[in-house]
Image (cartoon, rainbow, N blue to C red; front, side):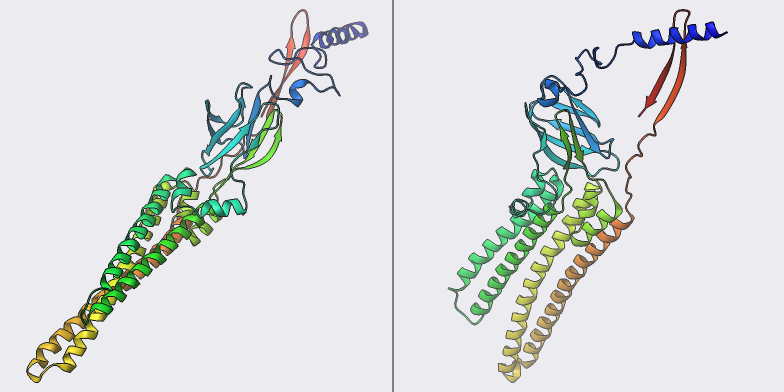
Length: 371
């Protein structure tokens, strides 16, 4: 019994000794593995191995586009032949769709080339661009288009109102000065509306989700990618209609909330101009009534009553646009509180198994670990 046991141990020891040792044999894939304490050329300069692109949390779908394109679920192995600047798009269940850029150099550490998280002078300046342009360039075309149309409309209407104001300054008559002042107020109102659209465009860009660098080595690049949370959606919608929906990947409803809010805001400007015109008409109707002859008093009173009704109607219209704008903002916030939010998939648990390997010539154990 003792001889048989010792013989079995000798066979097992011989089997283990016959396996290639990691320090002296070949690594998986045929590349030479360096001995402990001795760095290889690949560990210092990337050129012969792959770069593993990892996200935290894992499981995001990445799309790289540049001189070539790669799409897959992280972790992704990038061949050594790929280098340079690449646009990267992060998406997937539970991840806020984000666009950024990475730089993969030859002979240096890979890095994130897009705007990092946090406030910086560069971020502020890039946000203060033409309305909608920051959103369009960062991959949010629908909201960028809505802001761009609103900003362009404000610019055009301000220009038209300014030329109308300059032309009315040359008019004569009792209404000339009042009409010129109305055109000037209308121009100033469009300037204020355009400034509000520019501020909304900049703020929408400043709160945009971004990727960040977590770790970089010659063979591994780990990106911190944004995940969708209820709180993140709510506080964004608190400041700007539809911003939380955009963060949670509900892009159609995000553009709808913002677009309707911009339309009602423009409606306030137009309705306010109508109020100013009707107020001028009522003022001159009252003047005509006070100067009218006794035979014309009844007709002048009818004109005053009609002007007063017109003013009341235009004021109600303006109040309706203001109420609609505020209501849309509140409804957008409530929608962010109840809209479906997809959490990130839970990482698969590690499983392991041990299986004996028995044959007439050898004996061993196979250990399998699944990550």
